[in-house]
Amino acid sequence: MYTFTYGRNTPLDMIKFTKNTLKKVEELYKAIGFKVRYGQGNFHAGHCILETQNIVVVNKMFDPEAKIHCLLDILTSLEVDEAVFDENMVKFYEKMMQERARLKGAELKAAES
Image 1 (cartoon, rainbow, N blue to C red):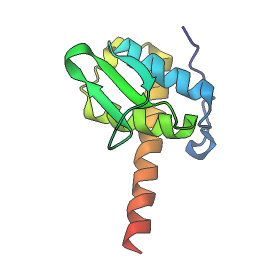
Image 2: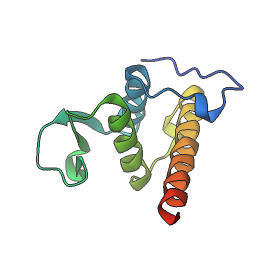
Image 3: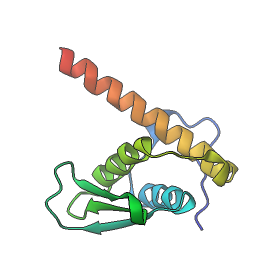
Image 4: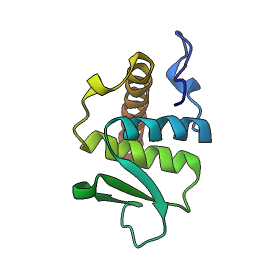
């Protein structure tokens, strides 16, 4: 199990999309009962969800940042019960969801321009 630590006052723009962060996101999936796999395929959005088997398949050619963004997008479409997370996982999950919302907001503003 990984330790989820992001200092108490870490600003959102300080979140690094690294392999370590990817491992933490994978642990969130493990906690909610999903397996994350990486493979090649004809994915229209870069991923495939096998809901009946609780498996998420992400394009293995993506860099860690793209994999994280893809997994976060999928995570928002799943029913997540935060009660299965420990305290540090809840903090990490909330920070990642805030970061995702911030990035999506920036994308919308850029598209409107």
